[in-house]
View 1 (tube, rainbow, N blue to C red):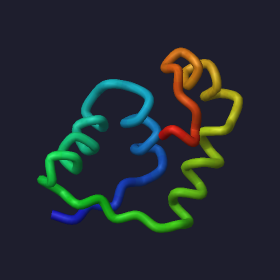
View 2: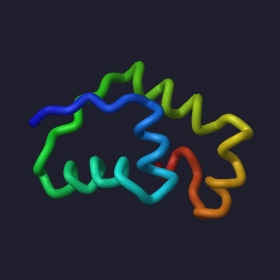
View 3: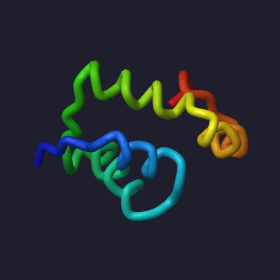
Length: 67
């Protein structure tokens, strides 16, 4: 199955546990294929660099580049 994941879902999946994280796990297990574009990754990077995500990223010990 091919899936397009919105930026909001990516952020939720990467930063918090829950249902959205299962999407990433399904992709890692090759049960689904996530389709993405350069524009989507650029929007994701730009969004994750916003101040409102800084404390969450820091608490996880992650940088945008590592994700």
